Image (cartoon, rainbow, N blue to C red; front, side):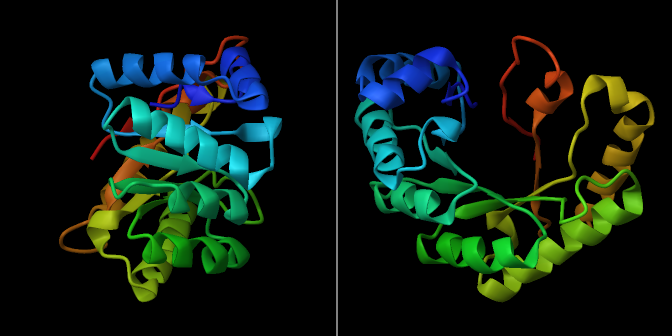
Length: 211
């Protein structure tokens, strides 16, 4: 679940002022709902790695739930991973871009974390099954070559907003079927369910880990 995200006003304000109470509240709420992982994202509010470390420390003091460290910046990811107390973690995320794979996969390996690989590259989000499978396979191969086992790899076929979903839903499911035969055991599948309503005023934030 990803309610501890700077995109929400209360969390953004908490990160700016280092007020732990909103963070603790949502950590407890999500843990009580049975979240397998809590996604932590300082978003556009801060690019300071220390703020991610602070966020991780507050959540760890509050609940025992594993964490998903979420950032586009490798130095912010590193700070969050370094602050971990030994509990399981996921790095969220890398794409199939070579530069990102080269910077982010070593972090997952070093800190014994899993990684989410999003089927995107410099050309953006794929619209067909073949491209989704190609990018997912590229991420999977790079991750295994870096030293990650399939059980620590989550592939995300990219779920499009609802207004684009007429034929995309079928293509996403077909890509997932292909991901499941990449190896034995297969990688996990991660779907960002909040993408469905990304165009709405109040985004329903939820990280959907399907398998």
